[in-house]
Length: 439
Length: 153
Image 1: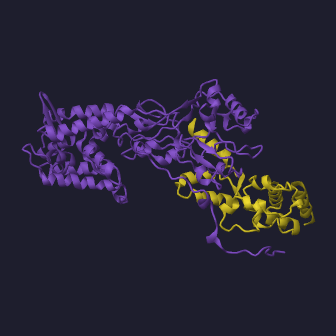
Image 2: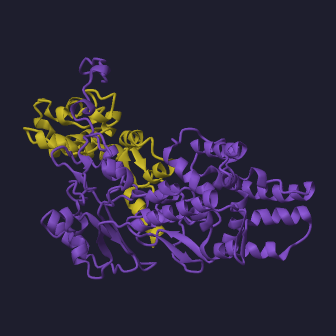
Image 3: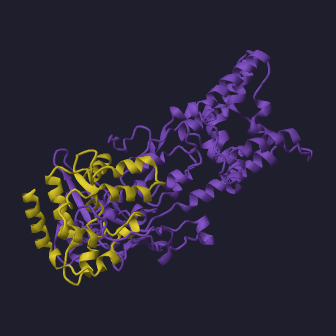
């Protein structure tokens, strides 16, 4: 007996949905937030310090549901007896929470203070938020089926307060504000020095007994003339030596064209996608090899006339004239910025290629995600990285990404931005990131 | 088949569904109306209760696999009928009868943890998320925690 019990009307268009009843509040950035994003509090967990005692579970449940029931707490400690590791799972109060999206009654909302709360008025305890959380943070009480979510105890988390080993810490977020200011002032200063004030260009400078040359230019000189002049070789040592110590800091802090691209980035919308055949980070090595080979064949420097770094230095003549051809090169390559940030530096720059080879054997590395990184709930470092080398997909999977120092320009934007101090500079031989586990 | 009927009768008795007065309050608060565009009276708690009371084809009915087992209907019922308990009991019988296609299995441990329509709803809401996030959501919550732990310790 499979009869239709009631006549069903097909009036799908006239249905009133939650969108009509309670529309989502529009997120508006205030003027100051464009320059200084708001910092939200967070609870950090250090697995090295956790002893697995379970005090956090007990104090959490006694505050939130008024009884000591560790299984119902909003923080759960999982204990791996084989590997002798403990780990606490707790709500990370994501920047873009998936539970908010998944909630059918729109009961979960992220407050102005960054804390994700459940409005008990609308919650029907369906448990779909648990299913949407990538980390499966404890939201649903397994015994009663009620939804009890971490609300950071309104600013005074009991788990942090009573953790005997100090594995849990409350942080309001911090920022190295001075790095940003320092980098922009260094960049401006070097731009003014190289492009406007100094008579020479970046390609070859002389200051007293010290001489300084572009390593790519020197390679082309050697190839075209067939002779090795020791002064040329020694003049590249300053830059190459510093690159060994500090990575490709030249690209991020000194390069006048890089500074120009950073400025252009501020105003260009990223609308167009770069064709995939151009997206090879090995292309710059090809251009370098082509430049050296071409110089050997033609007997003159083939790349330097079109080099944007040289062009930006030459476009302003000492007599006050503007050089149209050089400015054209600079403008054309800056136009590539509508696709991605720093396209020239990422894929094509042969000067960067020489420095990248040097940085590959350098002393330092950038580490994202020691034990403070909040992984998928944050991902701010990947957003600010101008070279796009921080793998947001890895972070979304809960893994700390490897950062190739050949591509990193040591601009320290990630270190500046990370609110939890998880992005750090470390020596190459220091072991900091745990290994990846496949699904 | 007689055994099934006994079990259904027991489920109706234990959930109090026999005292349903068809007021429809549970339908008014049911979140399935927001979740599924094909929400119908057959799918709603009242329809399921009525079908369980009148017919015996309820076990093979796919409508019992839409419910998210929330507490909204039970909260508002004037007669104290727990539609959640009824759905749970009916699902248990259906699983015993080897009709388990209604539940999503964890891709790692094989545990059944979520009705497929509810899973589809979550994936539809999160369709703009990258695929590796959605791959994580294929796992059951305890596997997700375990993977997250393995990756970070």
